[in-house]
Image (cartoon, rainbow, N blue to C red; front, side, top):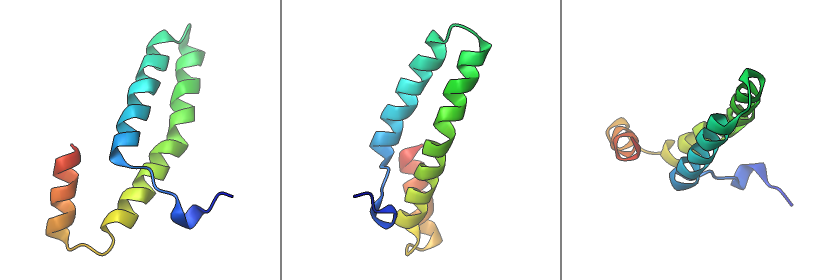
Length: 72
């Protein structure tokens, strides 16, 4: 069963997803296909944002910033 409060999209998984979506975007046959790829990526982007917020919610700003820089 899916439990939203336990869901986590790690930075490694996010990186792999972005790479796969870039490849799909590159192989899209037309502009409509490119837009479908972008539209499909949006909820995953939001999931990554929520995951990052959960990972850093209890950290002070300096530690949060360091985590951002490590993932950049």
